[in-house]
Length: 117
Length: 114
Image 1 (spheres, rainbow over the protein chains, first blue to last red):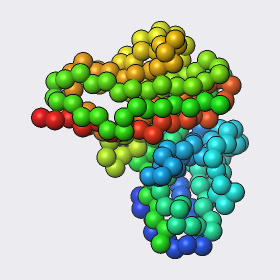
Image 2 (tube, chains in turn blue, purple):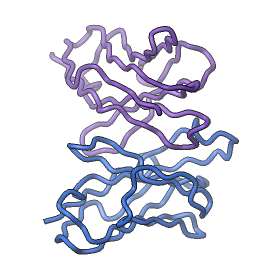
Image 3 (cartoon, rainbow over the protein chains, first blue to last red):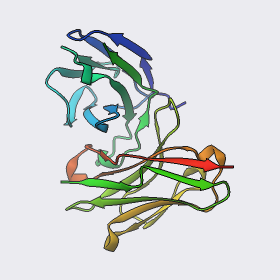
């Protein structure tokens, strides 16, 4: 158990809909990262938040957005869903607060499996 | 731009045999390199990381990797495979200048034969 929790575990929805994925980081961790894992695209970094502010952006679509709240939990919002958005979405956290966030060990949650029908 | 290439999408070894999973990276700046393992229906777990200190990095579960700048490689090894090592392994690269953007390889599925 990494200490990172994600809800829901599974989500089935229809095209055009909007969903929200939730992540609670490990106690004390300030950074939250979101990843998408799909068969055709592999594992891709989407976005990182650090202590409530966006810190790094990867291959995140404009239809997707995220935020980190004062209690440090994070939500990933996916809208106008398409079939191709079906994937495993992982959240990870880190938070030693060192100068170089690049070397922080990231602890991954179990993921949310999104199926768009 | 940075990238990693994992050679072999599937590797099968016998229990007790040497495990060698290959990873080559491309980076115009000094890289930070990672190996992660993903067990079925679970998230990723860090095995080890290279952050410009010792070139031979020891990780959890008996795995180690050696950073070879001349070969731009960061191969993962374990002297003796165990059935519990069956999983998907991902090599990843980032750097200080890329903030927290991390690039993952396509993964190598390791199977262990009894």
